[in-house]
Length: 203
Length: 203
DNA sequence: TTATAATCGTGATGATTGTCAAGGCTCATT
DNA sequence: AATGAGCCTTGACAATCATCACGATTATAA
Image (cartoon, each protein chain N blue to C red):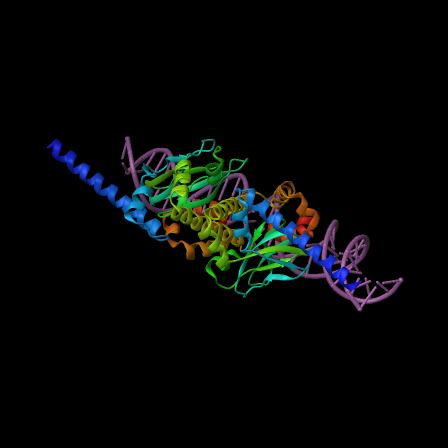
């Protein structure tokens, strides 16, 4: 009985691995097509990790080794201010990249933490491998440029939202923009993302 | 008399042009070194324009042809909300890139305006030339990736500031971060940048 | 110079929001 | 069934901030 179960498990793992690989490829090919050889090269720079709810991918003070691509699950990127209050810098769902990017790019220690809100599967990309990908395949540098550009635009849109809208309007914009988040995340965290108190969001 | 004056003017223009070229090269070489040939290639994709105080580089509704690199002067990027109130998305001083980037990258019409607060000299880069630079010289794609990454980090820092700090603290952070801005910009505009009213900033 | 427009500071008032506190609800565990 | 943890709502009060209004000072232009 045992051996059979084990080999079934192995098959499942391989199937899971293939499916993860496929998701990585689809993710990149939304931006730029890749040949099989190119994808093989790319894929070799990533590692897979799984985390459970409440686990930390990054804690304040850690050196930040990786940028993460979320395949399934949900993360929160949190900045804790000097009074101890927590603010959500961003949520990361399927198909999102996340890290403490300042610490990642400058290879310094994290000022933010990255924590699981659900069990989460990610691809990990070390800073070294990030550079190797950029050097080795111009398509990947193009890919990261595209991601960075649109990441910037998203951040700018959020700044405009914070400047122009009150709590209620910001909440409505979020509902419209990411309706699935409202279902998956406790409202106290949505409040910490929108920059209002939990009580204000209730009303 | 006339011809002499004219030729002097020409010499001055050439000298000015050389100095502008030099600033462009220094700007890029802060990120990545260039050979003379490479810089010649790069420089051919830029055009120079001068604007006077109160002139618009981009008006809401325009198609956005260019991204701008400020060589001297000062710009404000403004978002006007549906009540007609103006919010400063960012200021652009010497050595800063600015545009309505969403409209630039997607080649759609501007939702923001870009206006001179001082007489301003800029290098203009069209979207086509931006792509040609990325395609023609990997160093330039690397350059833009670097700019985009740090632009994103700046926007993220601003989001954190808006989430964690009240008006007074945000003003103090701005003084510390860009003391020259406080001198050059009327406080009503600083207020529109920080997300508070002019009166609150006074106190 | 004179007139006009910008800019800045300040007072009074009302709206929005944060904070503190209490209570209800759901869910997992015992 | 009972317990406790986590999450949400609501009320009362204080702090913050926006708005409107006025006057003073400083640029800007005719």
